[in-house]
Amino acid sequence: MREVVVCIHGIWMRGWVMKPISRYLRTHGHECVEYTYQSVRRSPKENALMLGKFVGQLDADIVHFVAHSYGGLILLHYFQMFDTAKPGRVVMLGSPVSGSSVAKHLSKNNLLNNKMLGASSNSLLGSVPSWKGTHPLAVIAGTKGYGVGQFLGAPLEKPNDGTVAVSETKVSNCTVHIQVPYSHIGLLLSKNVAAVVDEFIRNGDCH
Image (cartoon, rainbow, N blue to C red; front, side, top):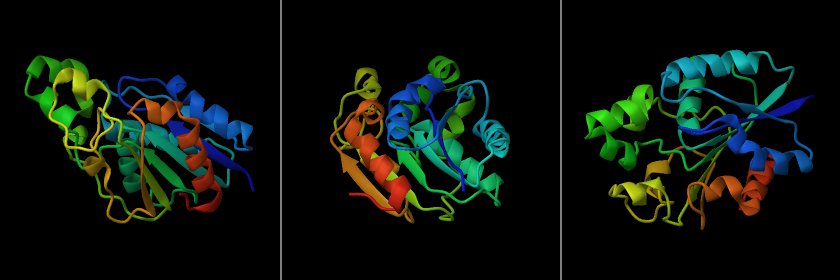
């Protein structure tokens, strides 16, 4: 059976930011593709619908997902919309599934909210579907508090990765929740994190 790993970027980014992880996964035998979407102009539901079409065109029996930050929120909408999603495992890296303190901070300024969050605002403020638990899910949260939240002066509960607090990544029925000593961007660049992702995709568990 053919397996494919779909790598999904976060807000303000493009698919190329997932290349460090996808490159690592490829060298360890996985077939990877990067999914690019417009995070500010399109709503998460629209992006989830487009993700569904993207996945539907893949010639694969098993589809795994690796999503960074806001990309994890797109996945929550995706799994709500597509009940017949193909089997596979899911990894979320620093995804604020219960709402983002940074987004709440930005939303107090209408200009910043419209320019920087746009159509993503409601989801980042916590309006997302609950995780259904239909697929094995690993949540990886960073604890090195250096990132955009710090620069914007947003109040972040500790521990955090500089952009997302560990508490904001909690999913009640995930398979495993791991804390790692990396920043929000560091989650994408660390080979140690990529190794954890590889282990979970292979075995459905990680340490």
